[in-house]
Image 1 (cartoon, helix red, strand yellow):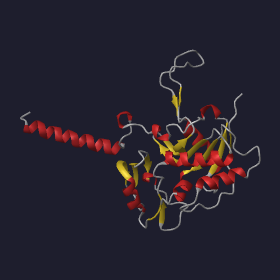
Image 2 (cartoon, rainbow, N blue to C red; image 1 turned 90 degrees about the horizontal axis):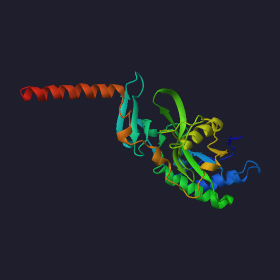
Image 3 (cartoon, rainbow, N blue to C red; image 1 turned 180 degrees about the vertical axis):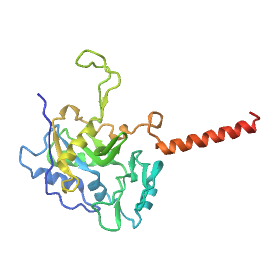
Image 4 (spheres, helix red, strand yellow; image 1 turned 90 degrees about the vertical axis):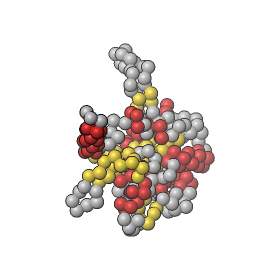
Length: 267
């Protein structure tokens, strides 16, 4: 029998720019009962919101749209919404495709927005080092999460945008299923599943920004590992690189350009 346990403690103070987040999280976790305090092989999950606050990614932005534009590398889709700012799905500087580039205007002072951490994998490594030292552990995973939508599905889930001390995926290719058939394409996004599970106990508006996950020991590693960046799909394999309306408009434009070229060539 296998078991997965997830819990989210209360008591983390409001995080401010310059705070030592690793020390604050370690203090929160060290104060838990013995059974709830992290052990070797556990995974600690922290939201990107508190990482961004500690790293000073709170910026003045009377116009959130300008902040989104500044964080955008590539527009995937844009949809106008009467009476509201347009919906923009974009690729941000981390390579993540997200609504509004991941710029968050919730749970932050009026007139400011939160940008995602500059390097969430590096943030995870820093937090992990602090927790291992302060809690006296040897093997601990850390996952940094943010909320995102998904193609083909309504509603939102938390995903991992950074991680350390845990294998981000479980590659089952080359193994067999329960009927002995070979698995050729199955690679599970372990850290995304951990992120989503943690959100069930943290909650969006509860103020609980840290969770502990127990039962994933076989995915926890001795070293920091490659981080969550490896989960970003490259452009060559991206089937959703642009929105449907954008793809249609580009196809029409390419078609017209092709006909013009044919006419010029005497076709």
